Image (cartoon, rainbow, N blue to C red; front, side):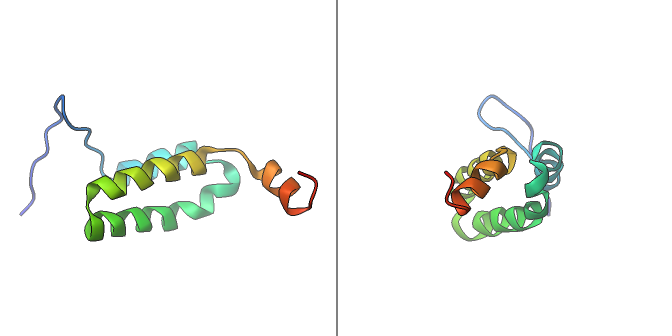
Length: 81
């Protein structure tokens, strides 16, 4: 049975499909390939540990996916950073 969720002042409702669409629009080009794995991890966290853990990691994943730090990671990897 599906529960109907109505937006209110206490909760933000977002489906995993909407989260994926947002990540696809916002993610850095070099991180697009990581979206499916990140989404699957958030879904597993939600099932196994609850929404609080999932939301914290969703925010962290969003920050990482949207950061454009490819150049900085290359510098660190090559010893130039």
